[in-house]
Image 1 (tube, rainbow over the protein chains, first blue to last red):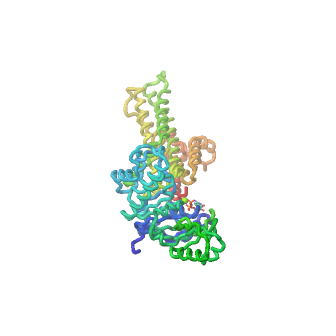
Image 2: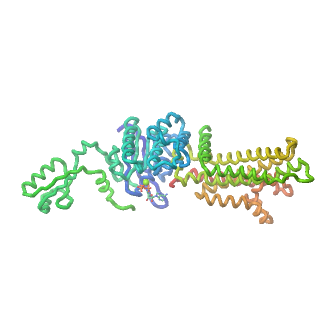
Image 3: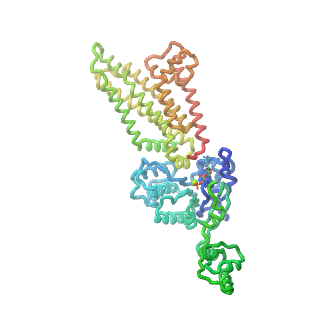
Length: 304
Length: 254
Ligand SMILES: Nc1ncnc2c1ncn2[C@@H]1O[C@H](COP(=O)(O)OP(=O)(O)OP(=O)(O)O)[C@@H](O)[C@H]1O
Ligand SMILES: [Mg+2]
């Protein structure tokens, strides 16, 4: 890609006390992409996001937003960023509308029309005059999204954004993110634990663990996926004879085994099994999910 | 500059959206009314002028309330953003931290100034209602104006001290407690320490400025208004600089 990245992290490290929380992290995000930011609890996702939005200063390294160094020209760089960091914490004692007015005043050029537009976009027209303390969690998420979008950012950062949204809300939210990315070329960075969620809305994922980037994956669109590697589950008898015929590694399951293979390989294996007189009761395939890969890459360990 | 005004507007909107603030302002008005209600009807053997003057100089309790309310706001205006987590959304705007820091401080100063002006005008109004026919202007009004002004300087100093404590210690109860204690005990501490010359250089022995409204100490050079203002001024600058440095460099991890 030759486009200028919206955000660039160059060898970012963060040391608190004598603990290295982020270790030489580098990545670039481009306009129009929705990027999933994954990692087990305590991996450093929130810390990374806090550094990108200037809430924390990196111990070393450089962060550029639209080519502007956030440390050197904070106001200019942060102008392009909209974010929700962890929960959308708003002023509960004010109305949703006044919350938006508050943030609108902090950026030049946000008009009253823009405020109305954003309210409509997140579907809060009917409740916007009420105090935020009367809002449900999902409504607060919506208002949180509204404040992040007010000033038409080039980079939208969302830490656990779908937490508290109902299924329809999640769907709407996903469509909305795709819309701003595809139509307005906004770059979206979403951190989440809901892997199926990320899989559905992201073009690419970054996986971090213990403050290091340990995986990066392009998520293909559905059709391409079905041509890729699949996990195939065979229910056969006798099992031990069948597995002795396998050339690749397999996973034993009840009454059979699971192997990862392509389309052609499945046909070949079935022929082999039939030739050896092995009874086949069932063959099931499933696409390898992001969850499988996530656990594979991170080793499914507990918080360290 | 326009942006700074908008930030103050924001702080003002937040302050006056809170029920607690209306309770405090209501209390302030009650104290003014209480003060009027407690004034004795007519003092025998005293001219109207004297009674007028006596009323004005005795009406200082609302000033104490103004300083106390200012201290409460100075301790909580920043801490509240941290405890509610809203600081995260506040600091990720194209506004430097320094501007946010001073917009909050400025609002609390304006709050104290506003209440002081309201106090001054209301009390004067009541004085003329109670004792009509007194000439305007007159000597007691000048002294009353001086007292209100000096009280505002006390408030300004206490706001600065409290804000410094709250922003550097992360602890609003500590800031509130220490400030209120030093302010209310200031005269006592000054009295206890009066034999020690060095105590004159401690800010909390110099907090009672309103006593200079009707006379300017004058017994020694260390008992003058200018001396008190100099001592407070040095501490004032120290607090401002320390608040500034701490806040500008701090990681927000709440
Ligand atoms: N202020 C701090 N002081 C010391 N350690 C901290 C601080 N903030 C975070 N950490 C540590 O940094 C590590 C990364 O935390 P972070 O919140 O970034 O993780 P995360 O990836 O967002 O996790 P989660 O999925 O649970 O939200 C954790 O081990 C945490 O204990
Ligand atoms: Mg987190």
